[in-house]
Length: 119
Image (cartoon, rainbow, N blue to C red):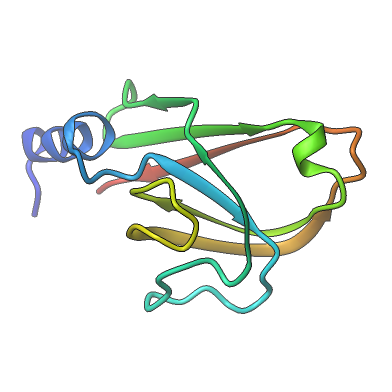
């Protein structure tokens, strides 16, 4: 069991100080079920350095990434993940989430906030 001080230390190490922390959010068009053994997104489309990392709330790390309407135009976004590196299909995949596809027609930007909660 982590103590409160231990959780705070892990939160700061993952969210702020570690060199091997998730810093890149990727979106894709894959449709298979997410699994613990996943190493990549099924069909990665775009990867971005997160625009912000927030560790101000106890035991949480919130990452935000943004894509503009031109990048999103024609994309049917159905999966996302957090990675440690910028290269497509490289780095450690920390999580993968899948959902019903959201289709972009070139008129909307996308901002994703992904929050890790530790307990």
